[in-house]
Amino acid sequence: MSAQIFRYADGKLANSLALTYAFAGYALGFALLFADSWLLNAAGTLLLGHAMIIAAYLIHEFAHGTIFAKPLNNERFGELCSWLCGSCYAGFQDLRKKHMRHHVDRADVITFDTKVFLNRCPAWFRKLVLVAEWAYVPAVELIMHYYVILLPFITSNPKHRANRRKVALTLLVRGVFFTLVALVSLKAALLYFVAWSIMLTVLRFTDAYQHTYDAFAVLEDGGKIPDDKQRDRTYEQMNTFSNVVSVRWPVLDLLLLNFAYHNAHHEKPVAPWYRLRKLHAELYGDTYGQVLPMHLLFKSFHQHRLRRVIDDNYGEVAPAGERRADGFYGAVGVSFLTAV
Image 1 (cartoon, one colour):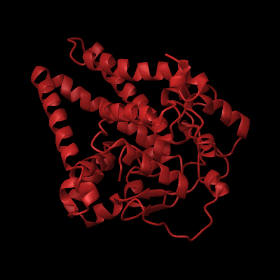
Image 2 (cartoon, one colour):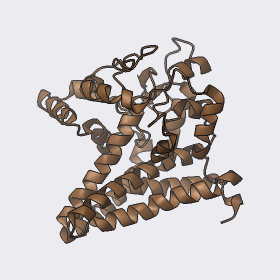
Image 3 (cartoon, one colour):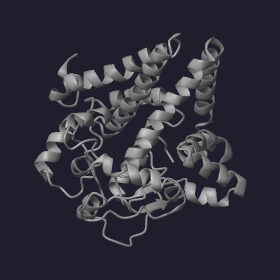
Image 4 (tube, helix red, strand yellow):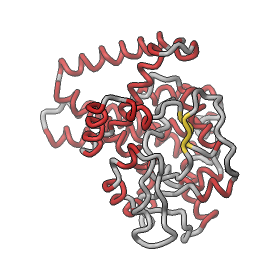
């Protein structure tokens, strides 16, 4: 492949490996779900889940245009990876526009407020969601994914109604595919859902602890957020955290395509994933206070798993100490895989 295909010449090998892993890992992991051995089934489930995680973070790279030189190629591969991740009901450009608002407004801007939705739901449904979240089922993310599917059929907005055909065809194709999978092997179909849930859980854990931004529910993409404070680059950095997998073993951050180096990403959004570790070191060094290693966040993820679903406040991070993230409740429903 010519280096001109990629936006950056030094990305040829890294991007080729990431793309190959995402697509080949998906195919191999999926095939292993049908094996007679439970050991191979388990390996296939983990491989499939991780391939979808990499595909998801590649969507993020495509949204920033850091992979290919031509925007059209980023869009095409973004659509392909969306099919791998199950986020294909919304168009890639819709996903991209939502994520760009996050960067431009320096806020979590959403058009579907799950907290308001749950407060307005019947008590039995709200309790069901909370029970699911208590059991670590990513119920809020599932609601958001299904809302994207339903939106064109329940709204009077012409923009969303125009997506009816796309959503209907996507439902048909995926419905037929998974029906055939279930007919061949119900076990494989169930394990596929487990792999997809692993992807959702990993992404939601990472997303939860990367910002203490204000969250705003606006009616549509062009809705304005309040001009109640100065959301400048200093605000952006002080409300952004790099929840790295490991400080001691930074190579482990490749498991998430270096997405955890989030301060560096927000400082330079066009820097490709394979440069972020070096960029982080150049910008912040080894003692940057915004670094929150993931082992500090497991307690909070467990302890506040219901609070973050219903509380508008993301919580706070203490200046220092091994327990400085204990009061960081985290965000929910801010996935870049949903266009609402």
